[in-house]
Amino acid sequence: MTLTDDGPVLVHGPVEVELPDGRRLRSERAVTALCTCRRTRRPPFCDTSHRTRVREENHS
Image (cartoon, rainbow, N blue to C red; front, side, top):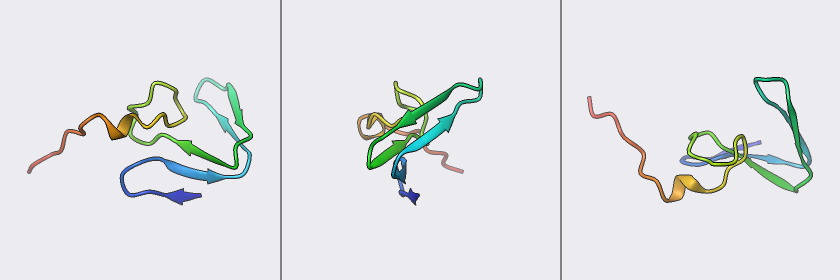
């Protein structure tokens, strides 16, 4: 796995993801991007929505 600074987690090789409801999704791609920002329209997979939507920042 590769953690990116402001984007998805990249998982190398085929991957199987278990969702909270128990369903399992499989990706056979060489690298699968898993969304961590929750902006994707294809959870749990990244659809690059993080590039076009501005993240609200906390200014304390």
